[in-house]
Image (tube, rainbow, N blue to C red; front, top):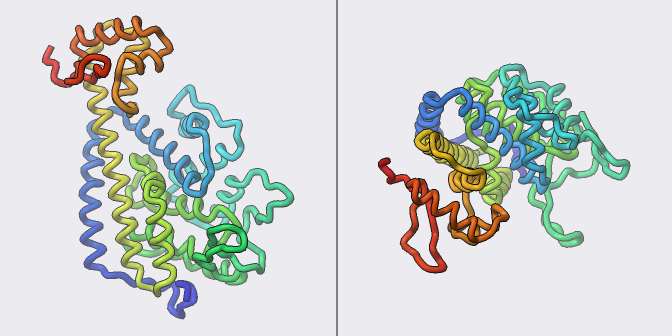
Length: 366
């Protein structure tokens, strides 16, 4: 039996003691992140929120196998939020639609979640539908054919889940929307329950995963009491994509006890918060570093590599890699590096000879 076939659906139950203990731990980390953000400047906060929202839009689509261009998404988010003068709406209607959905969910998180809002989001996600695509846009699914989640090649598919018939969807969705607006349970738990509930109904002919995660983000924004997101839940889900689908499938086939799903969701949220804390630490470190060396004359190649080392450099930094990245000669690369070593900005690692590597020097007391 699937979860919706139980007579008491959607009256979910869970082990309150287990769930609340895990939730308490994650809330402590959320408090830590909030405290870190409170001491940062306005520009840093906005930049962090912009990066988080950009990642959320990209990764929510990536979970479904849809690739969006990061630069397009970031520029479009910046334009929507009015926090970057260089931001412009994307010319890609799919990118612009995905960004509009996210910005509406977070910017209007206090407004009611209604079927009209869901239909509007669905229309934004599917701005163009070709004739051969059997998708009902801006409304619940209408087809009488079974709505199944399947994997595998044609002829040897594996059915992971089958949703309720389309005739049942309106009533089931009305119950979910009432829950979202009137339930008094903890906001994080509400986001977890609503996401599971929504994807279990699978009310649309396509886009259920993305809209389900948008509902999750909207309810998490309510739980945070802020439209500014400093962590990306969709990114954490994408990094744990296999366990995400396993957790959903196992819950949807094992009655109305959703303890394991809630624990998985809370753990995933914890990973998202932890990753954001690491990013903020790196941002603070980067800001302090540039403040320390603000009076040093550096060329564009040096500035580029230093920023890359802070933002995530692939592998070890050697002269040959410097030259390749900056498209300059090896002699120029070596001069750039030696200049940074003399200024105390770079330090040479223990390796020598052809394998000589360099790193940022955080022990310079100049």
